[in-house]
Amino acid sequence: MRPRVIPLLVVAGMAGVVAAAERSGIRIESPRPGSLVDWREMVTGPVADKSAEVWLIIHPRATRVYWVQPPAAYDREHGRWFVEAYFGRQGMDRGARFDVAAVVNPRSSLREGMQLRGWPRAAAISPLIVVTRR
Image 1 (cartoon, helix red, strand yellow):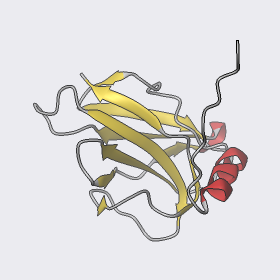
Image 2 (cartoon, helix red, strand yellow):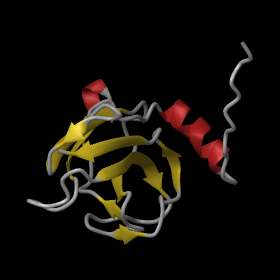
Image 3 (spheres, rainbow, N blue to C red):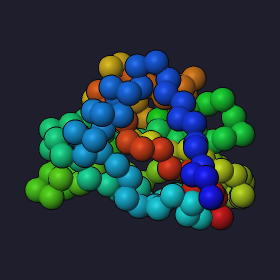
Image 4 (cartoon, rainbow, N blue to C red):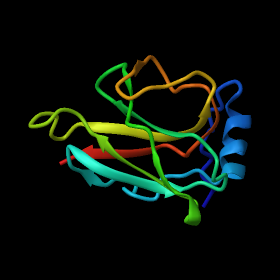
């Protein structure tokens, strides 16, 4: 049986951001990829740099908008960040799928509720997860 080859798409400049994510230790631990989420859901994960500025970005796959969530809070003693995020609109968007990533030290200033046209430039970005609204 031949091994299966899966092509890897690398966007210009993303290789350095991915390597920075590994160094920064930024990732999303909860919810897990493929999870069902509520309208409001706590999103958590570790970050190695306890002084990092962490923002969560949610991209509803049915749109071209990337939503900036409330700023992450920290348990700095344990190197963990957390934010109660919005997945769509209350009472709506059931079954919708969302791409989710955490960014470290964004190059431009972010604020809750901003609508972006793509992932913001940042020192590092977590591996992307996809979740579905229950």
